[in-house]
Image (tube, rainbow, N blue to C red):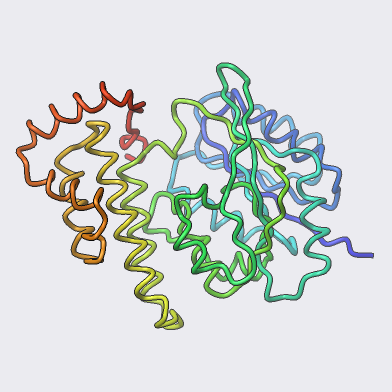
Length: 328
């Protein structure tokens, strides 16, 4: 009978409002051959107490209790090294799984060859203030997926807690410990050597609240650029992907720069990113929006700010505060 062990890694840091339900969502999975590794990154709230209570009641839990906060990449790599499962699944302490998550994905892997490294799919987003849950689509990357991920990066991309990943795929692509957190870059590295299987079924829930890491716009953009550079330096990187990679990096850098300007987060940095993006992929000058924003970047900063305030009023743009200090 096909019954592989699955290691679920729960990353925890000061999320005592949510960590209990995150842990319970794993404990209550219909698939039972689980190893639950909870890595607490120096929490100062009640998270440790909640985790300890669960660890004392469930022998499947391995509790990595750290007294101080460190880079998420360091903690995640250590948890992966401790794991013994045939497959690895990641969960953040403020999110949760639906009860069929692991079972549904293990059943898919049962019929796949070893060159398939990732089973992923869509999920839900839940507003913590209203409890409203909405469907959150992702890229439907399936099979050889690297080029698909490059070209469809803005179409939802990969839900970070959705994938079930083969052990070999996961451990051969350790997180870059130079970074505080790696984000989506790891999925590009997975896709260089492994196929992705898209399961069109929402099996996870990510909570929306004011300190989500995804709102750290500028820092996340810098992290993504770092990861793309590392990927391009890979000795096995296919030469035919160089141009699509440059186009992707230019578009991503432009997008971050535009958000910096549009939201008045850091107009100076936004201008720098837009100008850099133009140097990476010159054909973007044939895009009207790109050309207009590029020309705008040469206006005085104070004028750009005033124009964005005016346009924000006209188009009713929604803004969010950047959380760059979260990385400090």
